[in-house]
Image (cartoon, rainbow, N blue to C red; front, side, top):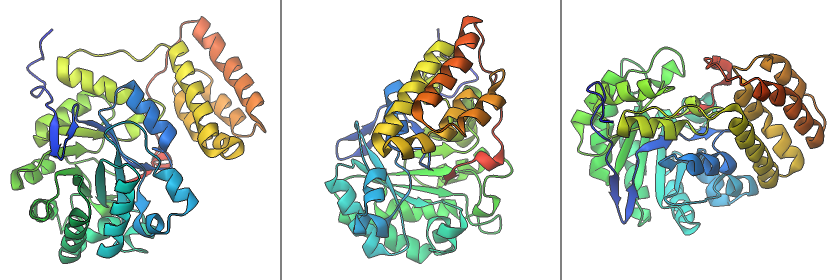
Length: 354
């Protein structure tokens, strides 16, 4: 089957230099508290073209505390570690540490809107208000490591300062190899609608590969984002909540025009159980069980009786009890051949992403 006329041209690999190629530029977004190693490994296994770590504070990487090292754990190739910070020397040192631990790509965060980062640390999206400081960070990080350095940002701090095109040019002059733009300002946080048309102005301002991000929760969203932005690929975030197979669906549709159906419910249950076990292995039984609760909630959303299931698993005391509740909830649905109905996630469940 050929690609429908309504789709943009076929996705092409992105060569970042240094032997690093993103064969399929459909990328799992970095999301705090979501894209830990178990989730990234699963998304990659299911077909994501690239997965990016949770945002890691440069000072924490330099100190190499235990929690940070766990966040930076890597698996598969190529690997991308996202760093945030406001001090060029700390960012450069953190980048060197990330590469020493196996990172193939270092991604710089100029997009995180949360107050503790953008205001408390003057990092993330705050750097879009300090173009000189931003340039120093970009240049220092690029000079510090032999691997490609990429940048993720928003349109600007607010609608009175939409300077992403200018920052993209600064990034290109600094040696950055790829830019991702989330089509919101910092002041929008996660409200309103991502502006894919604005991203086209960033594409026009630079020769760098460009990735479009924001509000991509279906294959049609991805195609429309590419069409309107002229981007070279897409980054998907909350559309992957409870659907680690979603990047593969997007990639297949953009490449062939054909839609891969959602896995049947038995397959979804199997993926969820593997994810649940991996969380306990990575974090330890008790922390893993606690951190996995949101994932169980997302996997079940859209199924008949899921609200009661979510309320139950949130208060169960141990892993065997949770596994029993999963069987009790899923097995009758599987036997009846039911499938999930896609639901829009409430803003309260949005991860801290750029």
